[in-house]
Image (tube, rainbow, N blue to C red):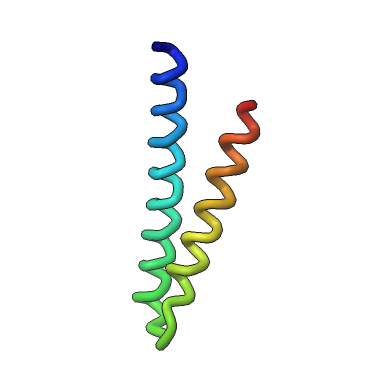
Length: 59
């Protein structure tokens, strides 16, 4: 049961990190108002990279 809670916490941490960076990218896109959503794209990529870094740093 401890493993289940551990991996569930990891999943929620990854989701929260990716969503936070995506939202920051969305705010950047609203501020700059470019034709292509560069901020959202960068936000997702940075969010995935940082969440993987945080998870791999624990192990």
